Length: 263
Image 1 (tube, one colour):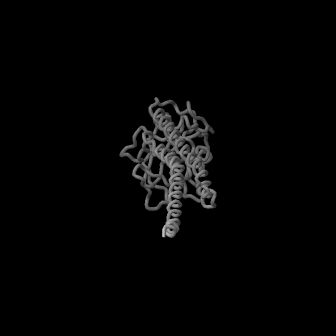
Image 2 (image 1 turned 30 degrees about the horizontal axis):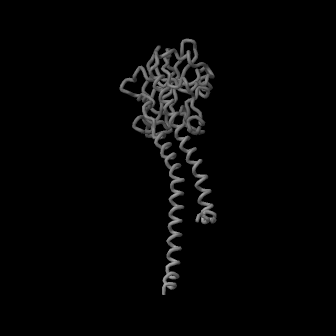
Image 3 (image 1 turned 60 degrees about the vertical axis):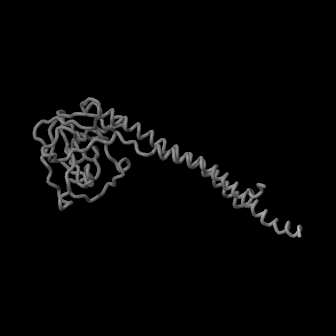
């Protein structure tokens, strides 16, 4: 009755089903692990945003790579802005997905070291190769509060480093690169400023990272596992249909013989 399962067509179909099952199980776990990663990241963001600000020098130092555990930690720094070495970061978007610049200004601390401060977003000017008009940074000593971020690299951000950029325009926020142009020691990472607010909301402050959305990864995982369960069910349905079709064919072929015998 089941000898048809040894045919070439059914052997290929069965092998395909056997391969498909573990592949879809693995895809389900991949989505499940992405869900777990997103939940853990949201917890980290929420906890770090709620934490009391600490001096930036407590969490970073020259050449220091900011670990993920310290991403978005609330920090504060007191110093004076070095606007002579202010640069803009190209191809950055605001909360409305408009493309413009981020304004990056070194803040010189009391000990002579500097920390990079991302003061916020400004729109493109008509001539994107000219240095834009930037709202002036506060003069004199100022205390800045913000979120600690790690140095950007092409690998971590996906942003390509371009050559022959216009003067004082950069693609990546990187403390080591800026230290070479500043000629002074720069703390690793940078501060994403949250306070004090700029007059007239320019530069626009960068919004908080999303710590509430978990995406649809868990739903995708469940879908893959349901698909996995559907493979053997579908295989059984196809086998039963094949048996039914073969039985009907056999019955059809036998009917003329019975009629002849009866005659």
